[in-house]
Length: 307
Image 1: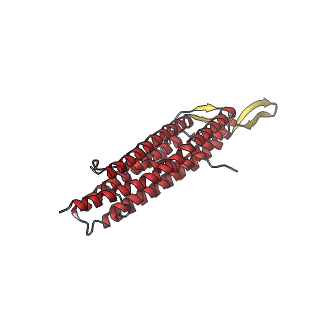
Image 2: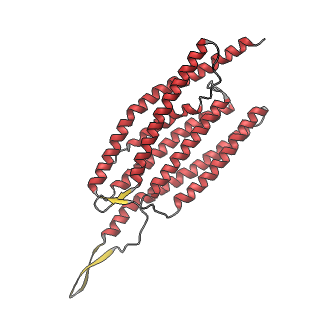
Image 3: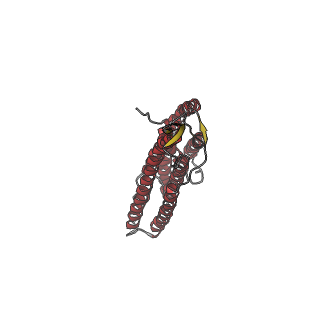
């Protein structure tokens, strides 16, 4: 029974990183209580950004190592399996980020989270950037999977008085074995990109409908998001063409032992990241509360100063 690749833990890392997108704070207030609250927000933001950057750096290294290698006859399909599991994990990650992004898009339409419009826009921009990074990572891994090659099914192994003798061509068998992963991954990526385009198109229609009755400032913000959505749809079309193109990234074939060592190293590294994910989760929960609270306190203070 095939196990889930531990990179499913990526679903936590991207959510926490959104803090950098919702931290557009005003200049420090003269009130000491406000100053202290701003300092807490700043401290949490900096901690989260540092933790997230460290996680992303390590993820980049892990994916770089994975996409640089391929299966041999000795490893059979171990590397292809790792790559397919990784693609699946990254797709789950994207789905999670999309839900977070959609919540902020909804915040632009109907504010309810206690964030300013600028904070919500920065959050949307961050999530868009992270989604694009994950899509690029998926395509890079998919392109490192082997493509179909026209090997003969059988090869001549000798000659007897009755004629040549044949045996199954191991190159043919190996190519059939690993390209099964390639084909299933390519189909899954194609389906995912098409679904993303459909979702973005629906999002555009939702944003467009919100223009009715919106004031000038809100309408301008909505139009900005509509334009960004159009750009994302165009990018998805390009990514789809890249994913379907029969181009294979050269890789170094590794044996069964090295493949097993790589799998173990990947899992060990992910386990090391688990502690950081837990820390990020705790800090992000506190951060969101602090930002919303700070916004409320600033709003109340501004009202008391009104003549």
